[in-house]
Amino acid sequence: MADSVISASSPGTLSPAQKKTKISETDYQPHYKALTADSPLLPRGLDIMGYDFKVNEPPTDRAVRIYCDGIYDLFHFGHAKALEQAKKSFPEVYLLVGVCNDLETHKRKGKTVMSDVERYEAVRHCKWVDEVVPDAPWFVNQDFLDKHQIDYVAHDAEPYQSTESGDVYAFAKAQGRFLPTQRTDGISTSDLITRIVRDYDAYLRRNLERGVSAKDLNISFLKEREIKTKKSIDDLKNQIKHVVLEHLGAWEDQSHDFIRSFAGRFGAEDVVEKFLTKRRLALGNKRTRSPSSSDSGSSASPLQSVHSSTT
View 1 (tube, helix red, strand yellow):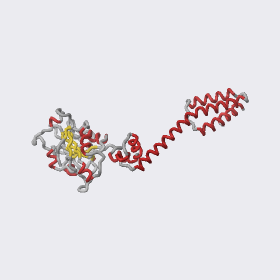
View 2 (cartoon, rainbow, N blue to C red):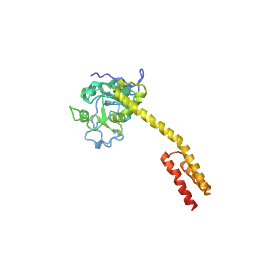
View 3 (cartoon, rainbow, N blue to C red):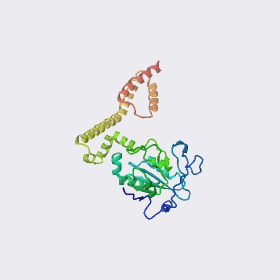
View 4 (cartoon, rainbow, N blue to C red):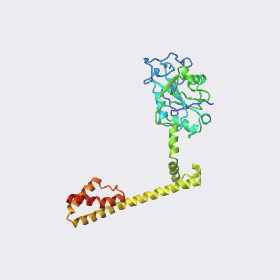
């Protein structure tokens, strides 16, 4: 695979971290002294005692070169927060992000929503990223670490299994060159895809309304008609509801007039008027009752109140 790189900065400009990317072989000497719980070089929030592998001390005379890798399909804020953790783990960090290509990803993990080029670009536009490494290898080995002069490989510490290994990061962990980050709960690419599948018909309807053809959506003629029929039924329901609500106020006013007329036969107009005024205030002039409850409420409840008041 190619190990070309894509700069995350604008052409012709170099960030302070990028100016330090070209370091000599003598400057690049991985530190093998392990961090301790009381070390002043320990990244804030990192509990060394919570892991079964050691973490080497970082270099102090240059930017720490940290490498993150992944698929980064449907790039979301969980991805960005992991990269932010890596970028902020030390005072000065140069962050390289490896993105696996379609060939490797589809073979090992399955089909992605975004193509590899789209995923490269999504990662490149994240503000924490200094450099994108396309065609990233599934396994990080010594040659790769040396070529890119990587001090740490950053990822969450849970073993990431593959057919060849129980943990693709075992090599970096054994060398003390693995920096654990924390996953963000409640968001993942799988979760996003699950939401799309769950609301599949709603997304199909939205795109059909926008003019996307059934062929482009890869659905049959029958499926297209089913979705459009459901939309027509929903539109009809909304129209009926609108008409009912429009007439509900008029029906209620008519029932009030009938009650006033009936109460007037017994000299109870004032009592009824007070009740109706109080009722209008309680409802806040909102017509929230259904027609059935309006009918029953306007004919029974007011008369019952009149009866109780007059007796």
